[in-house]
Image (cartoon, rainbow over all chains, first blue to last red; front, side, top):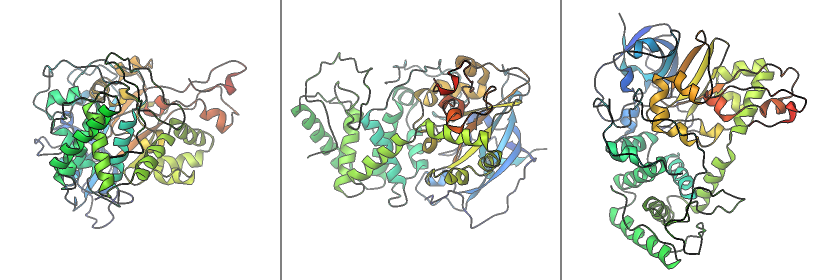
Length: 107
Length: 129
Length: 236
């Protein structure tokens, strides 16, 4: 279970992505508990920050330790890329915290 | 405050996504009225914090969410925030073998009896599992 | 079975009793609902009493946790915002590592979540939502308002943030970016609102009184009231 300070220091797998990397959210369906919202699946964004490593909520949800820890990223999206007829301004954006196993490099 | 009773019609535009995964749907207009939590709701919040803590680790917030996400759409839309919470806590305590269904049922009957004796009605129907 | 924590009204109440108008007064919290006990209220009592009997929790621990959450209110966040406004070095630390910066002010946010502060600027206006449940920085701001947890807010804010802001009376120019943060993981977000014009020379306490809960969620902007008594007025 998560202890004091939620970030997991060890083991420390290398982060696959770095700020500025263009990424795509996987388009696959979720199996069980999932923290990658439906409206972001298959969408392209940019890594804004690397939050560190956290236990995997998809495993914690079933009382498992959630290891190995997953790297968590702040990913930024243009609203115009997310919605067919976005009603706001062209510069509007959205950020969400996405786990590494839900991200692929974008071409 | 109880959330307004919702019609039990399926959501439009749900598209087969999970019941709780509602970003991008337009589910009504925002009611900005404020209210205090009832004492039972504050205690529900407190119990979740305690059950998750390092001393106990009986359940995780992730398991709690997973349990809430297992409710059907009509249930999810209809019951209030802390109603979802206490139901999930109950289910997880049974799942984790901390409590049994039988002892919960027995205690529910006792609690109702206690209220009735004190002159307060208590709803007879239970919370669905 | 005796429950010493449970104070309830001894009088019989009709089912038509209006229970929309009760307020908590002082340290003795009556149950909000003086109508029939709902199935959920009965369930909470049953679960709590069983857990106490089995030694999983104590009544004191529950009461202490209820008190702790009662003590966390938006005024705490307002203090942090005011400090960031007057102290640019603290502000940098707050943006870089919110937990550590809060700890400098003696605010312990506990072990259940990490916090992250996002700064409003003339070019970017931030709004916080949790579409998947209702994650919120409770250890700084207290319990969230019901609207934050509502299906309407959770569903609409990501797709129509400007419409939602308009519902809250906030209108922004098209050249200001509205940036929505969906709290999908273990980080809880707080908006650092912009310091309003006309507050030069104000003390931290005077500034803190201007900062509303909604401005730290992103559904309000902080304004300085004008007029000679402005500095002594509390936030609305």
